[in-house]
Amino acid sequence: ELFGKLVKNFTKETPSTEVRTILSDMAFPSEVDKMGAAVELYEKKYGEILRLPLTIPNYQRIYCWEENNVKCLLEDVFEHISADGKTPYRLGTIILHSHDGKYDVIDGQQRLTTIVMFMKALYLALGRNDLFNIAFMQMSLTGETKPILITNYNDQYVYNEIVNRDSISREPIVKDNRLAEAFAYFAGRIIDARNPVDGSAPITPAALLQAV
Image 1 (cartoon, one colour):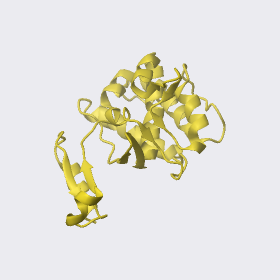
Image 2 (image 1 turned 120 degrees about the horizontal axis):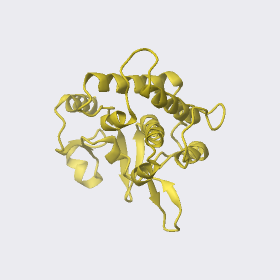
Image 3 (image 1 turned 90 degrees about the horizontal axis):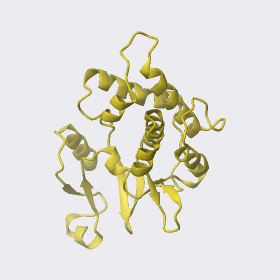
Image 4 (image 1 turned 135 degrees about the vertical axis):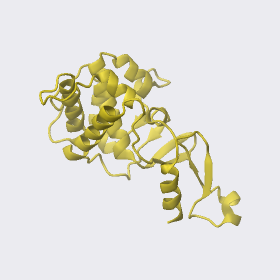
C-alpha cells in the first residue's frame, strides 16, 4: 500500500532525473542496510530503459496482448501527437530487479515487448533499420547480433524473427501468435497513418518517433 501511494504521487510530479529511495515492504528500517531491500524510483524514457540488459524471466507469462490492447496503446500515442506533439508520451511504471549487472523485468513485460514491436515497425517504415539495431540490438562476444531485451523462452523464436527482419509487412510472419499479430498491426497502422482515409491529419513515422 505504501509503495502504491508513493508511485502514484511520484508519477503526478513534473518529470525530473532526481533519484528517490524508499523502503520496500520486505524489511523494517533497521534491517534495510543488512538486506539491501530498497526501492529506487527513476523517471526514464523507454529508450533508456530498453538499452539496459533486460531479461523477461521464464516464470513470467508469455506475450498475451490482444489487438484491442495494442490498438489502445497506438491510439493513445496518435491522440497525444495530435494534441501535443512536443512532449514525450508517458507509458507508466516499470519494475525491474537488478542483479549481477542485469535486470529482470518484474512488471511491465507486456508494454516493453510491445514497444520493441512498435519501434521495429517504425524504424522499418522510416527505412532506418540500422537505427533500430543501434538502439535495440547488441553484439555478443561471439560476434552474434541479439536483442537487448531477452524475452522468456516461449516467445523467443517469433520475437527474434521479428527483431531481425529487414522489411515491413502487414501480414503476420506466423499465424495465431500475439507477437506476430502485434507487429503486423503496428506496421499496417504506421503505413496507413501517412495517408489516412478518414480525413484526419497525416501522422508521419518521424512524428511518431519524436513522441516516443
